[in-house]
Image 1 (cartoon, rainbow, N blue to C red):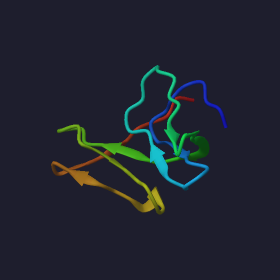
Image 2 (cartoon, one colour):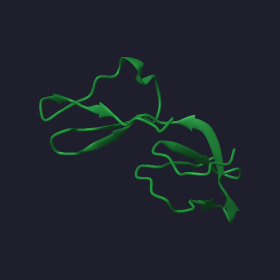
Image 3 (cartoon, one colour):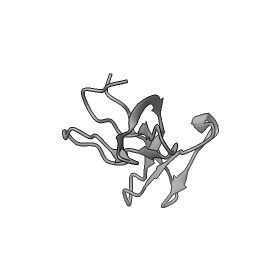
Length: 85
């Protein structure tokens, strides 16, 4: 899967060792992570990323179902980053 734009939560997989990395902060660069001397493969999966509206702390759901997750920080409900349509 090739993406024209790097998105928060994108997941890349190493085809050799199975290592996974996920994008925490996205910009306009051309991201091409490498592991085991091989280019990592972009997966269709996007990890959910939340931020605190007060202190701007961020968390990422790495495994599991985020549908029931309601993270709290600074006594406020954290907000989920919205992906561009």
